[in-house]
Image (cartoon, rainbow, N blue to C red):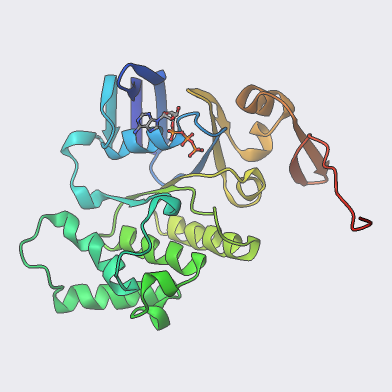
Length: 262
Ligand SMILES: Nc1ncnc2c1ncn2[C@@H]1O[C@H](COP(=O)(O)OP(=O)(O)OP(=O)(O)O)[C@@H](O)[C@H]1O
């Protein structure tokens, strides 16, 4: 497999603070990988580095064999953390999807017939056709995630990057989103996402990268999710419950349930 993403000795951060240094990482084309690690460990910064939106202090970042500064804006689809989106902005689901078309620095703002068809086809495929004309504020977390996924896919990217696509939705919607991403990956699109949900990674993703200001380990979840690696990544308090081929990762902090006895 050729590399969809290649980081060589990359150091980056904000002003004088280094977020990670001398990171080297290769994502082969066609991979479906999840990046996990504690809050503030640099996962979003890593994604922004791959997107070419993060100033690097040193090192080299390549996407599909080209330096990240030289790739076509539509070549990477990006779904940001939806927690950072201003939902009061008056747009419909259809307008959110169409925003993806404007990366092409076009002058004419209206979609062509062919682009309109693409918007409708994608909405249909992602299960949001019926809410295309709904204001985004009136949609559910799962529908918003799908709308932004459609926006990211509208230019037929080879690489799809998602920042916490499973946060803020219920377990069923999480599974649906991960199934959908797995289908999209099956069509040959490389997918890289971040998540805090280790169990979702364990059950849906073929590859995991444990990150904490650098790559701690990477591999198949069944090989990588060990006490040793998770302790190195999170600093402890993680237990892994194994049952046959299945495993469950839990926080070791005792849970004190308060009763209603008053
Ligand atoms: N724009 C910014 N300016 C200054 N520091 C920043 C900025 N964005 C992030 N940081 C800092 O860089 C570090 C890494 O942040 P980053 O958002 O990459 O972590 P993360 O692993 O994605 O966190 P989370 O899981 O909470 O989303 C943190 O210490 C954060 O405070």
